[in-house]
Length: 368
Image (cartoon, rainbow, N blue to C red; front, side, top):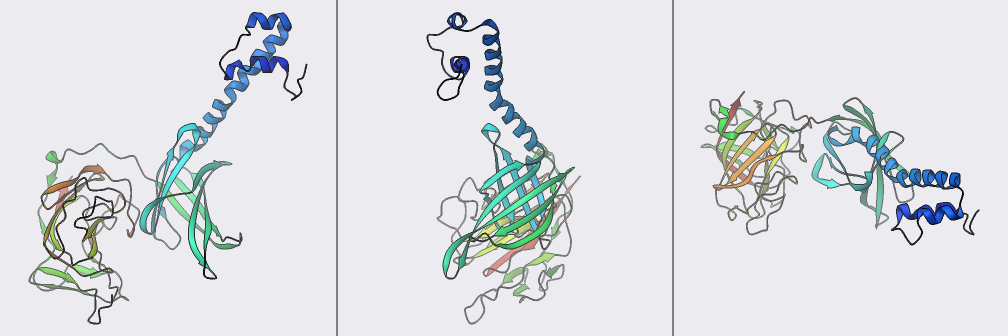
């Protein structure tokens, strides 16, 4: 028996499995249909009622290998990061870091034919008009690694970019360390005298605006003509693992610099006095960890910074106030020299933005 919409009478009656039951009961159904029809209908209804959850389970199973955090080596060799999280209903959500800038959400994340598909939207200009380009990342799994392809099309669906790159699964975070039990080695004084021994420029083609005098390290990015010279960043020659770093910093109005721990994680140095807490403010782990309290001082005042990095957990004390308290670090930040969080790296200072001064910089390595 088929109804006008093609749905059998028995299936329509048994649709109570997906809606609150009405006046009809199985006893009433038996009066109108044969026993075998009722049994088949019950079985069919039961299977179909479970179909949604079965498909959701399948989708979740297909997505599980991709869920987590991935260290990317993006086209050109830069550092990137991808985080994939499960959502209700078997859906996925993701965020990405692409070289510089901030960690940002993506437009779409799904698994299709065994591959992870991530879609990003980019604002652009074409013939003086605002347009959106669409970038699609396709990732195929190979153990704990990803083989990825990025393809970008413009608003006319014309391909404007395509490249291959790689990713590697980031191991789960260890438990939060007990900082009271951490053993430290001998202090390393990083700013001595009047020369930059122990430091080197990171971009030999850019102006080197750094100088050291009487133990104070200065960057003068703004030239005599008032224009930004976009000078080089500098780094320590030595490389470190986990450590505590203490220093003092002074920023002009609108000042912007950064301290990169192991060349991977940027602690923002910026003149943000009077602003509400934000992940781009003074003392933040750039775009990742927001200070719990605004502890910065006004421009042109010396500020104390006390940073501890242990087991991918970060503590920042700014001007005597704990603003990030032993919090987990999920991945590299924009401008990192590598996305590999498991090898030693230098301390590097950002010098391509504005003037900045540092003094009394001492690093104490963790002994493991």
